Length: 383
Image 1 (cartoon, one colour):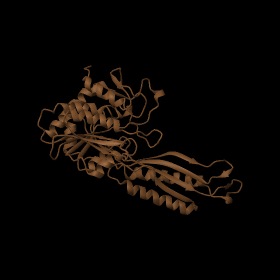
Image 2: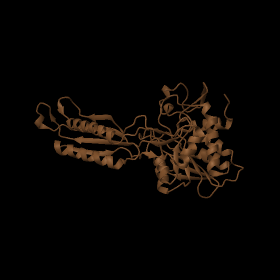
Image 3: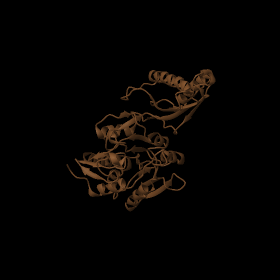
Image 4: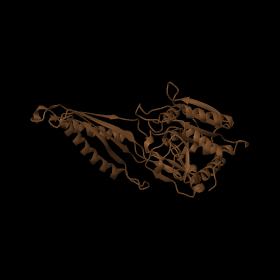
């Protein structure tokens, strides 16, 4: 198997060795600024104009917009610089050290998705001595794995602007034009504690949670009937009852309980209206049970994403890869880039099946084809 250019391996090794975990748990959460500074230095040396957009007030979380050429239009190659938390004891090698074995590159973020940046940089390197008619923009974001605040900051700022954007999430180099959204919600039920020997002394929050769970499961069936989309492997919206907490003793009427769930809507549907339906159903249960029931969001939701099948970018990606554009269940930053007016797809090296688990790896055989594919896309949009 042909070995990739040493600069690709050296850059990926430095990126993997630079911790940038983002998490909703403050004990794990880190900044990504060191990764952003690495990328900015490399791209600046190549002649890119680099701009760092601070996402956190203290500057430890940031986005990078690096531009080669000028003018309207052009192409964005985008990725996130953060990783999920990790358990070093479950890895066969150092998660923060790039290890090559069995024609694979092992390391935290090697496929999701620090590995995309050296390949995008290598593809860009083929055009440094060519006059670009439209700009090439490399975009690196913060906090995709937790809040997506990096992408939200870009959408709020209204930039970057281009004709098209490719997000290099791991798709085994197959174009993805559609994915589900995600909402994470909590339902807290507050009742009245009392001695379990006499139910009239209290009002059970756990029984209220039981009613809420039953209603959510009924609603899940309704969503399946109303919003199915056969382009997805799991063709319908999913609603997962993830965790529950409540009560303190078997001989005490439960005074408070809380349920957390997630809901992943199919494209063409609105998160806000579905959440409104849930709020109405919960309010009805509260009235029926005389319990205090609160619905609140655990994260800011991510909208479902769909890029038109007949759009220029989708047709180009299908022609270059030989694969029809697909739909996936996981969420990405695509809706935020699409808000900026760009045709957007998700397409990058590695498999999503390797992400978010010990011994994450990027296949060496994906590197050459990815660089070639990105070069073809740059040539189409920028020359």
